[in-house]
Every structure is written in structure tokens, then in C-alpha cells.
Amino acid sequence: MNLKELYQEIILDHGKNPRNLRKTENFNKDAKGHNPLCGDKVHIYLKLNENKKIEDISFEGQGCAISMASASIMTDLVKGKEEFEVKEIVNDFLDMIKEKDELNNNILQEDDKTKLMCLSGVKQYPMRVKCATLSWHTLTSAINNTQEEINTESN
Amino acid sequence: MNISEIKKEFPIFDNKIQNNDLVYLDSANSSQKPKVVIDRVYDFYTKEFSNVGRSVHYLAVAATNLYENTRSSVQKYINARDKNEIVFTKGATEAINLVANTFGQKYLNEGDEVLITELEHHSNYVPWHFLRKSKKINIEFAEVNDDGEITLESIEKKITNKTKIIGITHLSNVTGAILPIKEIISLAHSKGIPVLVDGCQGAPHLKLDMQDLDCDFYAISGHKMYGPTGIGILYAKKKWLEDLPPYQGGGGMISEVKKTGISYGELPNKYEAGTMATAQVIAFNESIKFLEKIGIENLQKHERELLNYANEVLRKNNSINIVGNPSVKGGVISFTVEGIHPHDIATILDEDGVAIRAGHHCCQILHEKLGLSATARASFGVYNTKDDIDQLNESLNKCKKIFDLK
Image 1 (cartoon, each protein chain N blue to C red):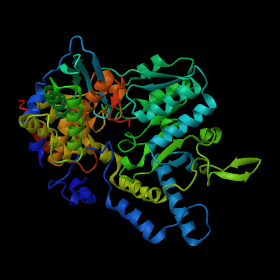
Image 2 (image 1 turned 90 degrees about the vertical axis):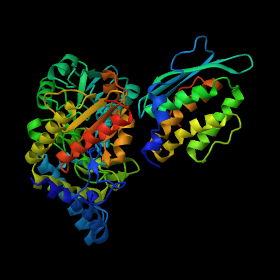
Image 3 (image 1 turned 60 degrees about the vertical axis):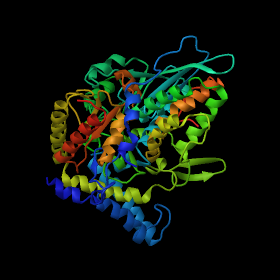
Image 4 (image 1 turned 30 degrees about the vertical axis):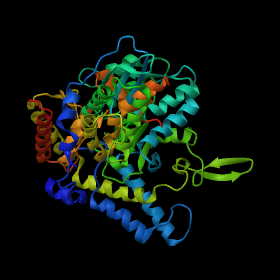
């Protein structure tokens, strides 16, 4: 593992030009996340329809290339998915970042999985894992409507 | 001063870090240790170990003498009036907590004000914050100016008749500003207000003279002064140490213990409860000797040269913004690179063996004021050279290349 694998083109691209960096109109769920160590902040907005399908997802925030890219890719991939599917994707991603070698869910297409695996480089940089997972934890919080700000430093 | 010879005294530079020569630019966080200090810890444990101050056997007496020798060396190094004005702690953080806790207990009441500055490290804010709840005090912040400095006027502006103590840093760990603490202390004293100086960054780089400064409290971190971790120093005027209550209770700090009451030990034992970081205190004497051998004037000259060179090099580099522009500055440069987050910079630099710090450097108040979520920081020690700064610059250019910036 080297730096090139961490800062792949796709990460740099999403980091520089994050997709869905805006605020969803008429959102019905949202949550904030904060990593006080880096100063990274994210606010995720969801619009779920009556069938609990994500009609729109967006985020506002600031942070390093890894955290911005992670939020950008995540929002792209979960849009149009149903809530239970999103939960499975989130858990699968977090397991992969923590220990597993690959993604095991049957929801995402192979292309999308490959995109997501670009973030796996962060595993070699333990101090940076939180950058990659902040938006994912925040998404879970939004779905569960916990109204609790995710803080990477309080467990 | 021959830096390449001095650098050889630091074993960490003998080894490659991830196949690179180490370019260590994180001394404001913690400095590397010379071999004499490392050896002293080893030798003490292998040949001389005993607890201090209790037993009467040979090793205990010898260890106690060594431990007290460090106290005398520190007293001399900082020109304190009395040896008993030197209290060992686990770090500067504990030293500040000791003052906030004991001074707060005795002298702070509802509505009283503690005046600190926007430059303070969290360790000189959070201990006072505790008293907001327990004592209902208020904390006032002297404002930092656009150059990242705290002026005498900014302190004066915030002093009221409720100000009971002032806590200020000697040298900012972010902007590098050296504060006019002698003037601030003299102003505070003219109004009967005691002053605590957070000397974490000041002590490793500046000449210290407690009698000349006339401060009431001065907190020092050992591990930033080429010493071991786990040791700090609280200098406090004797009148305060005699007047304030003890901080922690336990063995070593008592005189007589009865079911009906307890009397406390003489200074400095009163503030050194339990078994202290004995080996580290003893090894810290070697850090003092190391600094004395180099000479603080030589060290300052060297760091000033590095700082000037780094300023020159980094200012030439487009898209690098240096944070703050204090007129009197120590060997710390915080910066941002447009378009690249400091954590990405730190990770990319790390691959070249360049160790810097990225984040808020435990100064969230200052970063909020500056409108920055994080900065990157290079800080210097005695072992750094101009080559290190060239490597820093080269690695920063690599960051820009990766992020496709010009």
C-alpha cells in the first residue's frame, strides 16, 4: 500500500468536486457529524418517500480530501436505495474499512463496489480511518433519526 | 554550533523511518531525546533504582539525592529564588490543573473572572473551565490581533475589578508569537492580580529567569525540552505554595496522619503525592545539562535562522499561506495550502519522512477566530537544518502535484 493507492484519481476527483454537496429541499431526515481532531464537519440531508426509499440525499460540510470524497461517493451510491438496503451498505462499508478485504453486500453493482473500494487505502493510515467513516456514521444517525450529533471522539 | 554533531546525539535519526531519513518538524508537540537522556533512564533502572524519600537504605538515599539534584538544576536553570519553588508534576497540564484547582478552591467565587487569551492551548483553558461549573466563575479571553499576537493593551482591556488571576502562554504553539509577559505581569501586579504563564513552548526556546519575570506560576513540560515524557514542572512563588491547599492527597505529601486530622508535609513534598516519575525526573537533569551545554543564546540564534529561512522559502511557494505574522516569533510556522486540507498534507509529507502536525493543535478557540478548521504546522528543534526545510518545501510541492495545483 502506498500513497498513490490512498490518493487515487477518483478520490481526488470526488474530493475536489464533491457530488451532492448542497442541501436537499424538503428533507425529512438529517444529522450532523463532527471530527474535532481534524475539524471535519458534515451535515447530511435525506428525503425519504413513503416507501422509505431515498429520493434525494445531499450533504454540506468541509474536510480533507478523504472525508469529502467518502461523503460524495456515499451519497451517489445510496441515492434511490431503500432504507434497509442503505443500512446494509453502510454496515458492509464499515466492516470493510475495519477488517474485511472486500464488500459482501448484494445490493451494489460491481462498478459501484469498485468505486467504494477506492477508499480501502485508508486502512493503512489508522489516523485517517475516521475521515473516511464520519459521513457513514452520520448517515446512520440520520436514518435512525437519533438527533444526536456524531462525534468521532465520543464513544 | 555544529548541528550535524548535535544531531548525532539523537539516536532517532540513526534509523530510517519508512525507508526515509527522518525530517522531524514536530518539536512543538514533543521533542526528540538525546542519548544521554535515554541512557540515564536505562542506567537508573538497571543500576540505581529505588523509590525516593521513604526508605533509609543505600539505594533510596542515593535515588533521593539524584531526584533532588534535578530540582536544584531546574532552580538554577530558571533562576528561581528557592529550590522549594520547584514542584514536579506529570506534565505542564498537571501543573496548570494544580494551580487552577488549588487557587480556585481558595480564591475564586461566583462572578469572579479568570483572564486568559485566545491563543491558549486547551491545557490553559479547560482546567479553568471546570471552575465555571464548580465555582460559577467567568472566563474572559484577551483578543488576538490580525498578526496572531496578544498585546499588552489587549490584556489591559479585559482586566476588570473582578479579575482574580491571569493565565497566558509565553509562546503561541500556533502563530509562534512570543508574548510580552514581563510587561503583562508587571501590569497585573500593579492591580494586585497574580499571573500564571504556560511555558510549554517558552521553556524549550527562551531564556528563563523567574526572578526577573516575577511571575507567580510558570508551567513547564519536560518532554518538549529534550526530556522524558511524564515529567513537568510547576514553578510557583513560595508564598503561593505555602498559602494554597494541597492538590492531591496520598503518601509523601503528609506530615502526620491521625484519625482525627492530618497535617501536610513541608514544601515541595506537599504537592508531590505518591510515587513520582522518579526515573524521568532524574533523567531530566541530563536534558537541562544538554541545554546548558548548547547554550540558550546559541539555540535561539539557530532557531531564528531556521525560522527566517523557512519564512523565505515558504513565502516564495505559491498557494502557501502562513498563519499569523507576529513581530516577535519563536520556531513555529503554521500554514495552509489553498485547495489541500492539512490532514492530506500531513499524510503525503509523512510518506517522505517529513513529520509535521496537522489539525487545530489543541487551540480550537484560535482556529475558530481565524476562521480555519485546521492548519499544518512545522516546528523546530536543535537538530533541524536548512535541508529539513528544503525537504519540507519539496514535499509540499509533491502535495500540490498530487492535487494538481500550481
